[in-house]
Length: 376
Image (cartoon, rainbow, N blue to C red; front, side):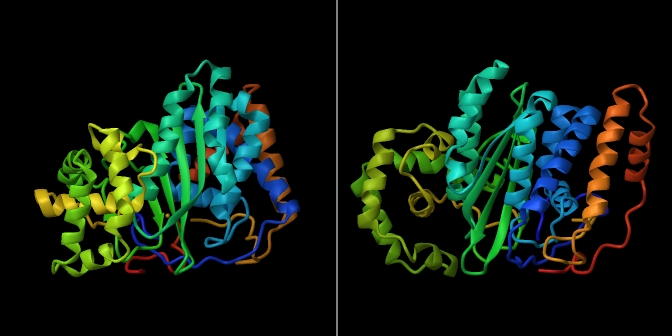
């Protein structure tokens, strides 16, 4: 698992092949219960902004999933952890001040409707939240082309309109996953270095149109998209006949100028003024953007970026039995300790929560095998 924003004293990558299997119902119900107490405790201590900031941190999220009962490379850590959080927030979201939408597969496509239903209850306009959700999904599926197909999208937001996105893609060829994290408070520009972090396997070939150094391409592509579609298709066909660097040969391999003509017609009619607006054009996907990026480099000398923008703990065992099976008695005791500590803290007796804070200040132990520098 790679992460491109180093934290002091914590560097390195690890390959995470996924183990199969599903969380059994007896474990998932405990995940929901423990998620509920963790959300309440974190919101009480750090506010809703603190909760969202942590969900958008790949390392913290990974540790949360492992605390809930996943192995560090368990299949389903992302989707089931988000599912447990969403179910917990369905019960205590009003108390915590955070709502959750989306999920895996078909649930991800219901995100806008769920946001539109929840936001007005807190006096929020849903349109900016829906825009954030859709744009984050479009960036990671089309503007950042790394070989991972997005299949999970979870959207969390609070009463102040702050939001976080946790979405995941799968590389069908390798069976490896990559997780993308967003946080509204660090997004200065949706289409320029917008991620709070990206965790997952490294990719061999990437077209990164949201890299900082890809700014010339982002300026040229909308101008190109406003040209008559026949001219753009002709330039793409000419590009296929030229001798280009190896990376371009791979990027061109499945582009058909004739089939893309209808996409170019769509972008021409849309007349988008900038890259962010162009990205929201219905019908413009990864192949259309890739073609426009390559032609923009040919005509305007505006190259895109090929830089790949691509953290973990055990508390109760793992669902796959690694490093040991989930200890149900210890799990239930953890939920009860947190529940009791929160209840007492709210009555002014915060000794137990202060003890938990002191535990967080202990020096880190030796990293588990496979997490040190140099792992691919």
